[in-house]
Structures are given as structure tokens and as C-alpha cells.
Amino acid sequence: MSESNQHIEVGVVGLGLMGCSIVTCLLMAGHRVVAIAPISADMDHALGRIKAHFIKSREQGLVNEPPEYYFENLLITEDYTALKNCRLVIECTIENEEIKKSVYGKIEAVIADDALMASNTSAIPISVLQRLSKRPERFFGLHWAEPSHTTRFLEVICGELSDIGKGEFLYDLSHSWGKEPTLVRKDIRGFITNRLMYATYREAFFLVENGYATVEDVDRACRNNAGYWMTLVGVFRWMDLTGVPAYHNVIKDLFPTLSNSTEMPKLIDDIVKAGGRGVGNAHGFYSYTEEEAKLWEETFTEFSYEIRKLALKYPVDVVKKKMAALNGKELV
Ligand SMILES: NC(=O)c1ccc[n+]([C@@H]2O[C@H](COP(=O)([O-])OP(=O)(O)OC[C@H]3O[C@@H](n4cnc5c(N)ncnc54)[C@H](O)[C@@H]3O)[C@@H](O)[C@H]2O)c1
Image (cartoon, rainbow, N blue to C red; front, side, top):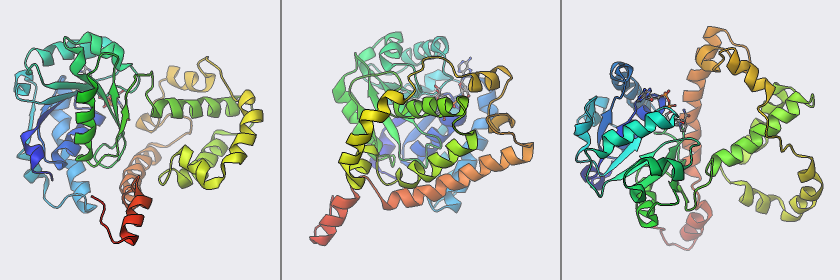
């Protein structure tokens, strides 16, 4: 827990799935956190969810103290005026521009002029969202991955009107949250990770809908190829590791055959129109009994702690660290 973060009070508005794990991460990093519940359901569920994260994290050795120790730094309230001393407020409400806009008005009515604001939006461009606020230059995207207190992923996104210096401050600060962040200096829809992943999803739909493979086959290929190396390296290092000319060769003939469809795939459209949400309601690309769906959720939680341990052994600069150790110098 960082001592210096104690002096940086952070607000989180919206205490659903992600809001609760972001609050957990910030408390673990030593911040005082003001957690705003915009709907009454958040008041009923947030504390229990955050507590469950801390209990599991203590079992897994991420934290040493019981939840109550961290809760000394936490205020959960429906009252936006509690945000007044926050240096940073992260909005984490549902993906709806109108709702986000109304939340920004309430936040800006109480925070200091030089406090920063951020959204955890998955896909709304930051250049669009920042124009819904009064001071767009202090507005950023902070895009987390669930569960935020175990993953090292974070995108810090500058919109067209953001002050890049303030973005660099967030980028630096987020290292103390256990992140290996990416600074997206120029806003683009989907940022980095969703552009990469949605290109993959599009191709996956193409393969299944055109009869080349089943959902199970596509998933198996993802898990056992990309899933095998992606915790260690990204795509560019992977090409370096496995020989760049081979990729150069394949690109010529393969790129023209990849899907570039802009249509909604029928496979997902049918599921969503029938009310399917995935394991959340046991109705997705696979069929589940209620019990299996619950077990998948539990298995994902268990796995996220396991993979974290492996990821921590292989930080982005792992080879630099090894070189420094070989040369008898510690990397700072
Ligand atoms: N779930 C993910 O894996 C994930 C990943 C990255 C980013 N995000 C983004 O994070 C944000 C929140 O997603 P989530 O998964 O936590 O959603 P969620 O459905 O679990 O929670 C949504 C929250 O929005 C707020 N909300 C709902 N109705 C509201 C209203 N009428 N007025 C004000 N606030 C209201 C509530 O606090 C609610 O708990 C979204 O922008 C989403 O795109 C989600």
C-alpha cells in the first residue's frame, strides 16, 4: 500500500461490476476512496462485493490485512458533495451517453477546477465524452479490465482536447495501482485493446457463420495458440520471437481473405434478441445449466488470481531486469 497515495483522494461514480473492483484496486493502492452510488441497488450490493474481493485477495496473498483495515479509507454514499476533495473522479456507469452526461454535471458541480475526471467507457470515444464536460482538457479515458484489482491492464486515453501532461500524470500514477498501463496519446474508437479484440471477434464470427469451424473449435484455437503466449508477449514481440519473414510472407496472401464485414453477425444478434447475456443468465454461445454458469464465474475468478501470479513473474521489461541482474545492477 503506497503511503503517498493516501493524500490523493479518488472518487468512483457507479458501483456495478467494474466500479466495485476499481474501488478495491484503489484501496489496495492506498488511496482514500469516495464511492458514489448513483442508483439504490449500488447501495445494497457495493460493500458486499468489495468485501468479497478483499476476502478472496487476502486468501490469495494480494493483501495482508482484513477488509475492515482498508474500509477505513472508504466512504460509500449517494451524496455527490462527498467528492469535493477528490483529485481524480472515475465515472463507471453504464455505457449510455445521456446517463454519463448527467453524472458529469453532478461531479463538476462539486470538484475543484484542477481535479481530473475520467471515464471507464469501453467504446465511446473520449473526444465525444469530454465535450459533455465543462473542462474537457482535464478529462481522460481510464479503461480497466475486470477484475480491476488483479489485472495489470489499463489504458490511459487522451481525447482531442485532453492536456497530455495530465494524461502522463495519470499514466505515472497508475503504476502504483499495480498496472502496466498504455498511454493512448491520440483518441481512436475502441482504443487499442478493443480494436485488436474486435478484429478477432469479427473473424471468429466469419469462421463459424461460414461453416469453417464450430464455436468450440474457434475457442480451442484461441486458447491454445494466442492464449499460450499472450501473457508473456504481445503480437510484435511474438513475431520477433518466431521469425519476422514468415509473417511477411503470410500477410500477402492471407490479409485479402480476412473478413472486413461491417454487418452485425447473426449469431450474436439472435442471442441478444432472445435475451441472452452469457453466463450471467446461463444463455450465450454455449448452453449452460444454472449450476454450470455459476461454476464458470467461479472458475474465472480463480483463474484470474492464478494467471496474475504468472504475469507478475514476467513484467514487460523482464529481459531488461534479467540483464541488470546478470550485470549485478538492480533496475529501479
Ligand atoms: N464489464 C466489463 O468487463 C467492462 C470492461 C471495461 C469497461 N467497462 C465499462 O465500464 C462501465 C460500467 O460497466 P459495468 O460492467 O460495471 O456495468 P454494470 O452494469 O455492472 O454497472 C453499471 C452501473 O451504472 C450505474 N447506473 C445504472 N443506471 C444508472 C442511471 N440511470 N444513472 C446513473 N448511473 C446508473 C450504476 O452504478 C450501475 O451499477 C461501462 O461504461 C462499461 O462499458 C466494462
